Image (cartoon, rainbow, N blue to C red; front, side, top):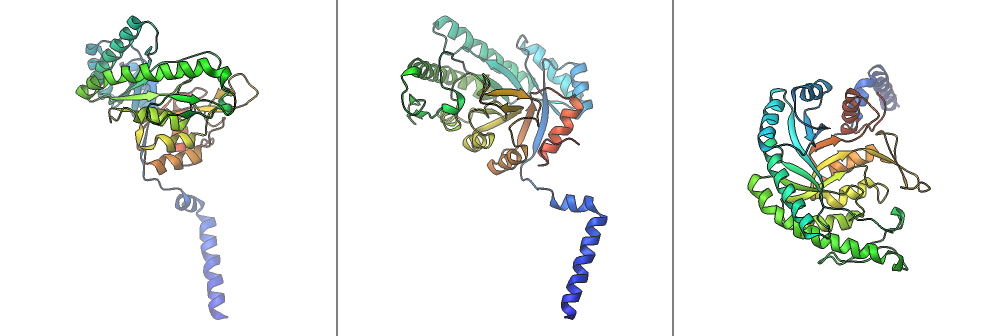
Length: 327
């Protein structure tokens, strides 16, 4: 009886201490992650005004996207960023035209990406974001996709269960895009290896490689550590939950973008992009899975709806496993 009473008194004392120190209790309950994430914003160039703005908002990194830049200008931009303590971690090469039926157009696109890889290296960035190409035409709704593809050739056999006749042209376009994109990226690999830049392939509403296992197979098909994946955490949630994308791409992840998307299957695009925290992405779960797959590195915000400072604080909460809740 005496031991029971002592146990009760001890438990009551602990409870009183926790009530008196709720911040300590919250700290003890906070998740601990093995992986470290760093936040960045997107900007055109690294000039003094931009870098000062980023630093003031608490962003240690930036991803640049202005393509009309020379190697000399990139070298100068790197020096400017370094003066402000800002790291240019990536360059957004964006959309290429690797599946253009015109051979001359394909050649111009490949050569331009080669130039942008050199610009990326001059900036001191270690990766270039690249979207190989896009296709259009009649295709399944996002929730209909069930892709059956050859794991060796990546040739798509079917894209939905049942009758695939309505999507024959799309399947043909998908296979041609895969073939031509693989040839183009293979040509880029030696350039990227020479300057130590990763070609980070992104799926961004280009209607290709739209399911996680297929996208992962495409990236791995190059058998090169110079070709990896740039995953946007909100872009493709209409096809599969973000957690599935993270687990499928896992070791292939080079960089992450962050935005949010609200699924509504009744709408034209199966939903809308919304400010982070107002969509269908479960940010608490996503942070756990980022840790599960072992990704440490840059996360660049590509979203609106908040000020720079608010985006900075929001990313801190997500990184800490608290989700995208208001402070």
